[in-house]
Image (tube, rainbow, N blue to C red):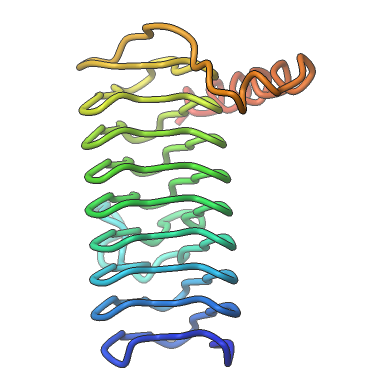
Length: 210
């Protein structure tokens, strides 16, 4: 279902079984595959490919479990987000995804995540809320990135690296260089901080079994 207030360029290809919410805009030459659910007030720029088959040899080219994009997310252009192979690939609310970024199959981006130009998120990765990933950074599949983390330009996060919340990580392989001290973190209560650490620990232990 496409909401009557959505603005979709005439060159966009929209497959069947797609939901597009109110006031969402989709730019020229983008492709929205079957099984994609796009929320309200979303902006998708030109030449995006949303919901294509996940790049997994055991599943390709199956249709998969689709993609869900939360309200108020911005995807600027030339971005690819693959359909899940075992679960829905999820993009949370108020994310900002810049040109040439890629989100692999089954990945989860929580709310307010920023992916800079060229950032690559491997399949089954969980990026917790308010993470900022720098230009051309690469995240190995089946990895958890803790809440409020900043990953520097060109950073490489290898498999099973413990990228715990509130840190700054740079290099190849990435190393922790200090705390992220942005104002939004300073405003968090101790209870909220502990909660984010506990969530990370649970997710990190889960991914170690994959």
